[in-house]
Image (cartoon, rainbow, N blue to C red; front, side, top):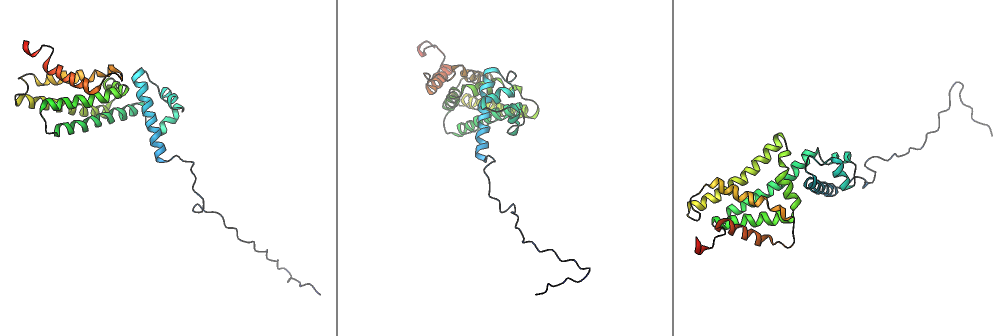
Length: 230
């Protein structure tokens, strides 16, 4: 049996290799290495809660990102994956509280009751929330002025809307004869000032928020003198 000879000067072609199918991106199975949106949201909430605690205890200026990071178990630099800055974190906290308060205020103003009952409703809402969230109440009242620029201006507008609504309610009470003729602006300041100082209760479980609100409103409107001596 003779071997087949290759023509002179012609190289043998290499054997064709079997094609190997490389896996594409579409073939790869999804991994769970990246946190879900729910996990990110939950961790951001954890950061905010830690910030509220530290801001309430040490003040905004006395709190560092390292302090907040230590409470949530991460390095300070890792916090910037979730927030822009410490000031932006304060803005988120204060802004969310202001929006929630404004929504409650709109519901109260729209209710079909008189001025006294509307102020009583506001006092109940505010006192129950602040007694349940004393740290957040402290931050909202003490630290919002640490904001700057557009963020400060936005929070000022929201706080002023609340103040204006209280004045409108009191003015309506004066106009319909429920309240005596008085300085409405000063009365509104008195109402807000006493409400905003209630966080000193610090969530005392023995204090009933509704009862405190009712006593507060009765005291503000009627004073200490018994009706027989007025």
